[in-house]
Image (cartoon, rainbow over all chains, first blue to last red; front, side, top):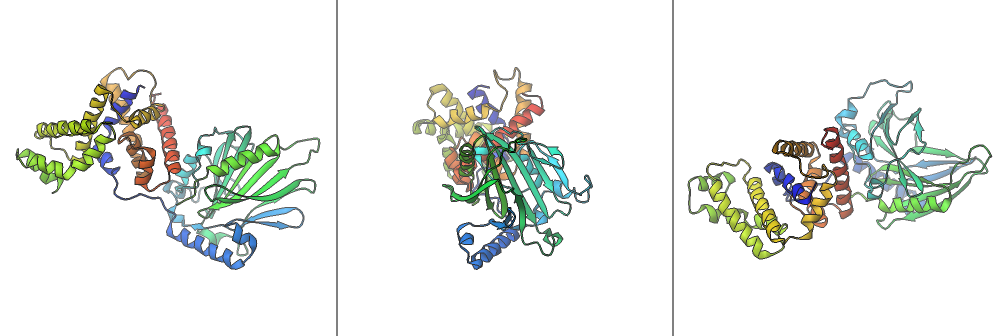
Length: 272
Length: 182
């Protein structure tokens, strides 16, 4: 369509929308108050820990245990269940899988956010990247974008897979709700774990993006066991508005994966 | 003065109508025109034409949303002037090209009915968006704000504004595909 035709098309916008857009004060989509209070409490807890790691990395910590296990812990704010979308809440009690977990495949990250009713992240680099299949599946479901809702609605994970240059990018966010009473009593906010074999090379690092986002990095080189070869991967873990986020870049070589990961991290817009 | 009172002055053909209109909405209309015209003398001429158009339109028109109705008159006149004299800020073309990427390609729809259907589809799409997203879209593609100005008005960062506009255009494109326009 030609420029003039586009300009004329917009003439049809109704007056009430024209007036609505002439705002006097900024309109912001803010984190619900309860979640913010939880996040502030989490900050204080981390500050009181007094560890160098807590002081340096806001939010998610990487905990290493014997036997090559790594857990991600903390950085969590509990979002009010009531702030979720009506569409999502309407699914409570629906039984679709044996575990009770609900899985929804969606066409885009934005569609997942619309489905949940919460803004999980803003990243123009990923928005401009094509979706791809990363090979990530959940209970046999394979999709570029999906939302996974726990049976008790205490957690909602969203996955998105993108292609960025020569690398694949997998983004995983986990939103926890104030259904925390449903979580195990001894749950210490360890929400994700990895088990690596002895011959897997895992190194740790940190990165601070120009925006101020600070993430902990894990660089992983899998052994070549002659059967399946996994591409080197580089993971970044951080928390945005109390939503733990894991970004994994995988590529044919480690430097390419890391470069793609850094490019992605630089694209995150920190919530105001 | 309320909009109803202002419209009342025009209905009564009061000589206070135009001064009252300029006092109430002069700065707003000037801002609308100034985004669409590069020369301040063109803006002055546009506003004079707009005041005359309002005087001629009311009565019989009795606009319910006076401010938005008035802004549309100013915008139409400013676009027509810019088209005639070629003096337009680059943002106007920039926003039109951005939006064109999610609208039907090629020539304008053949007849008035098709053009109206497309406009109605865009309107329906906009009304289904969250208020702040809708405001960002209208600021950019109706008011022809720069991204920086839109961001400032919305209280967002420039990056977030670009991201929201990008996603919204993508959603619009998908919606128009679904409705058979693309």
